[in-house]
Image (tube, rainbow, N blue to C red; front, side, top):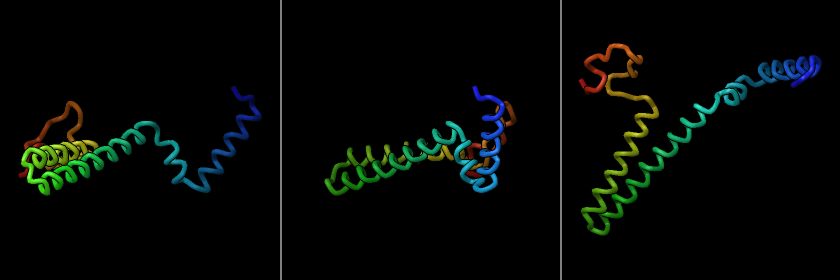
Length: 108
């Protein structure tokens, strides 16, 4: 633990950093949830790219199975991307325990 003087110095440094670069403070204080979300987005985009690459390879090799598998992987990556981004056809996700309106899973 810090003694009183060290705690005051640390608080002064934190306040100075917040005043000089609030974006850096926001990034550093985002916590593990934001880091996990960034990694999940990167994994989803990588999965989409890999799936499309496999599908194109299947087309070039005239392999229906490989093309289908590549499209399946790209679709799974796209689903993961939409899930991590929180995108739905009807807009925002409903509140937990709230009313799920008719447009939450529809395209209407």
